[in-house]
Image 1 (cartoon, rainbow, N blue to C red):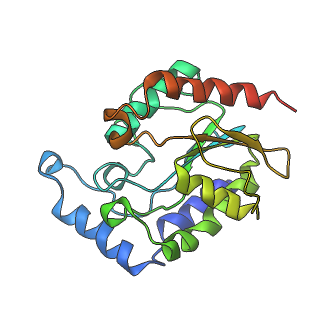
Image 2 (cartoon, rainbow, N blue to C red):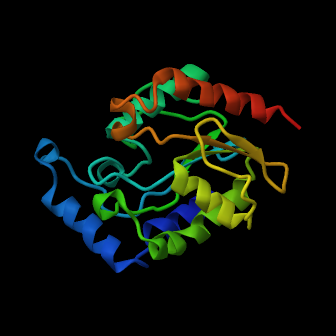
Length: 222
């Protein structure tokens, strides 16, 4: 068993946050009408992808009827429906669709994870809940040691800065912004591909495609 596999087993068994445990399990019991005949995952959602990846993607947290249902990051909801076609186009995924953790999707040179591993009510994890999850993200960073960290949203960006101990006010979140970390790593910011951002055109396909092209550029940058 690899280090990441061992870590993911720990993540799946985590029950550190009572509010999140209660919520994720209630959602899995009650279900959404459209998925009434499906079995929900209802547990913390581990990361997935290429264990030798140079690009680490950090999201916010599982969606109640997306990852909390399928058990795989960004799989089964509108965010994933926007993300994976972009990754396929950029060469980071072998297909544009992500329906279940048992499908044929494979990531290339990329590993996808999140700041929080359990679906939170209203998509809003508390600071304490994010702090409880942080050691898992720290271990992923240590094991993978990515060249580029793509932060989908401000919360992911601020969590990475916290892990690296960066308090420099010049590190500001904006779409497309990128900064070199104290190590040789790069951090690249993107708006989160949530339906709220994509339906309002705050994040367009063109804007999102540019992020993945920039990530490829940064892989080869000193």
